[in-house]
Length: 95
Length: 128
Length: 166
Image (cartoon, rainbow over all chains, first blue to last red):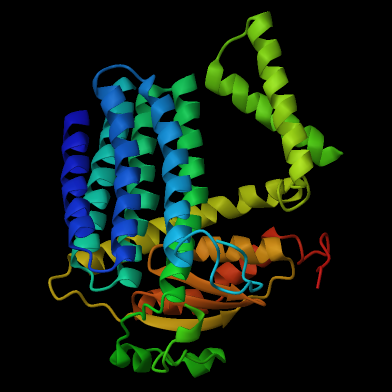
């Protein structure tokens, strides 16, 4: 049963990867990479159960954190396009 | 009893896998960034959530279940944040959402005392 | 002070759950790292009712099961739309106004909207939200205002526990 879940995750990863490669805008790519990160997390967890080593979950937890920070950072970088913000500060928060 | 738990966990795992596949198909099929976010939302919420729930049933009452629960909670808190950050970044760059004119007429917004947004106007290019 | 204690105990409980060690020396190390985190959070000035909303805990436990059920329903709806050969989507952007009084309430509402597939919050300013909806059905589901009313209860403004900050 874990094998079926693993196969499904891998197939989804393939679809998401196609979207990341095709684009067309940079935001499609970021979105696809974010989904790819979530899928990697699921894959690590399921593979841990498949091989009978649930310790893999710690790695999945850390991966979730890195995926979150990474997506936010890339979104901000693309939006502000470099080191200093070009957009004047508004009240809408910073993310 | 063990068989019952196995069946529940298999159903959850298979359902979650199917939903993730559907989300992936949505990410591939849908026409623009904003609509694709809904496809990614399926993967992030119920797809991953159901798979983790299936693993939880499989693990029983152990520390592993707690860790799986932590991952799910974390995922449910961060997924909207990333989606919103991405949507705002795309909007700031002036990526316009694809709109369906026919759809606007289907739902009568005035009955709720609200108006649709006019997105035909040009985005403010001076900001970007 | 209450928030500091609750943050510290939450962090230490998290440390215990993730490590699983119960030896004296390692417990001391865990306590040390917890204390360091509390000091850093204190310096960052994030220990308040927004960074650590203890007062919402009880009402959240009532709200989350309802949200989970909404999630399941909208997931199935969107999955059906995606698998449909003709792809019957009617993407639209609508503007709605939340009835919340605190910023925390608005953020809870916006996050709940984004979490449900079919609706994504694009912008939130002065209580006005721009929502991107995938189908007419998901937009209509939002416009009934049930989620709005429930988040209004969660933030504690309905029974006067929390006053609006203006």
